[in-house]
Length: 409
Image 1 (cartoon, rainbow, N blue to C red):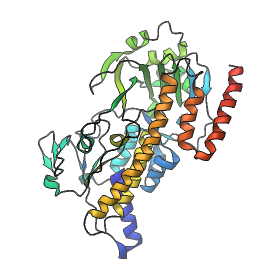
Image 2: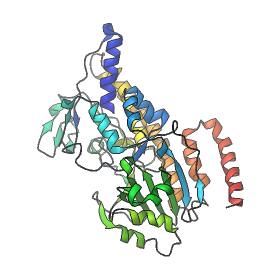
Image 3: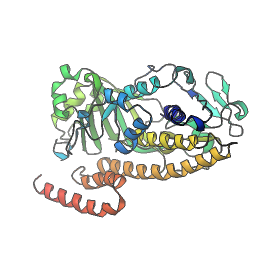
Image 4: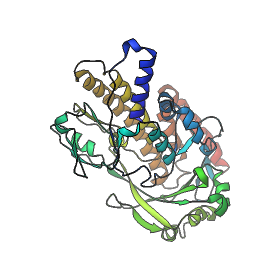
């Protein structure tokens, strides 16, 4: 997204004001995977109006995005293990947070870039902290002596090698929750009851420190993930297990058979990975010429759906900082603007981390959830999105509403 924003907005600025055109920005994307189709990209994402969707518009990709967007998949239902509904907001086919498959979003972004700026099979091993030379697994060394690039941006995820040069000591923390993932490839034919149950949207069910989540994806696929509070799966490789093993962990727990049926209909092979996060309020000592964004900068758990949205917002703000610097002589202005970007990102990342932790703890770490914790879960999201002055009113409304609801459920 950062590369697309830089190229699109610089060209737009140049065409509208030729007399104030700036020198072209040279961009290179080092992609660790050998090809764009090397592995599955996972499930579905919802883009939010003020962050993810706004970034798509600023990048000139909103029209293309709408070709893949699924507003009907924004349907959300949160229930307990008995399938009692605890939260189900009104849905719209034209507004809200539209869904898009990760693979489709990635392909859309790649197709918007000149092919020559993406170098595949370039898995970063380390960056020299003194001169920012970049060492890759295939033996290549780039940016020798810091002569090739003015700025190295790490968008390399949870276990970022770029972050290690900024802060060698801080490592992601295990959240306490591990997620197991599978799919129902042809759900319309093989599991119509699941499609009907999730209403072509998203169903989140919680209870006893466990969760079963089903999400409608494109091409008739249903993404299935099962969460457990359990010891960490050590290492970055996924644990391979089966739906049969996963279902054994629900035996005797009183889970509704329709929820367990989602897991039964999924492909037998299940991949498990522990969920990690960086400490809330995480920041690092600024280093001229190197920065990070997205999960590399503020890794959070997926509860709340803010990960891709805050990453896209990072890209927008960093692109603005870079574009403000291109006409300046010397690199000092660039470094000053990047430092200001980091200060802003740290505050935004802290808010998202608090929200994510609150929502995770409410559903996975609270006895009697979701009945006992749905107010705290919802207010975690509301506090992140609502202006502070309105939050006390929201607290009253949420607790009063659920007090009445619980009288009859």
